Image 1 (cartoon, rainbow over the protein chains, first blue to last red):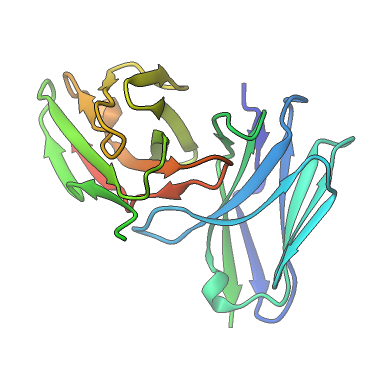
Image 2 (image 1 turned 30 degrees about the vertical axis):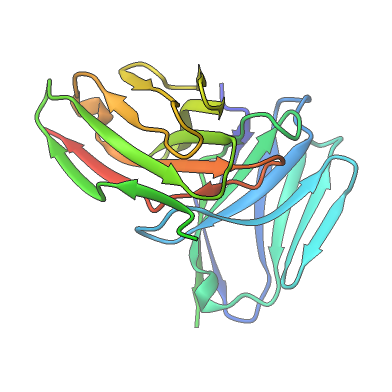
Length: 112
Length: 111
């Protein structure tokens, strides 16, 4: 039973436009959510996080939105750049010091 | 500050062989984890440790052993390799909070 779902395996956007990556979760105990970015042949790197006490967190071009009632979060990248092309993983945790549960990932391609 | 290091980068094993994947971190992090990444499956937790001497199972622990004798090192042992263990393995560490630092990965092929 997959608790963190990234239902779209891939997304392609034009450079300069907005990329919206979606993530759904089923476990109502999850209260911390993170996004990781992964380039080929490298380990994932932390991108941005949000706790359930917030509904938005922004860091430069990256914004994460959390809709607790819908158990849905999304990552917005504005403007998208070719260097953003990577696999993006959504992850969730029940508690600040608990183990992370990852989604399957979304491959983002940003076309020049 | 090297962060999280993993060795080897690549390994080919025959079915039934054993080996140890090494992981070390120099950030004095208490929490360390092992994940495997398979196509279409995302990152799945194998084993984790919340401190030296303490380990626990994750989502897919069968066929793997771990130990944590020091804060720095968290080796993953494959006892009898199987083709189903062909994967990319990532080690990660973190202090308090959830921001994990991942190593570069070990690509393992079992024939």
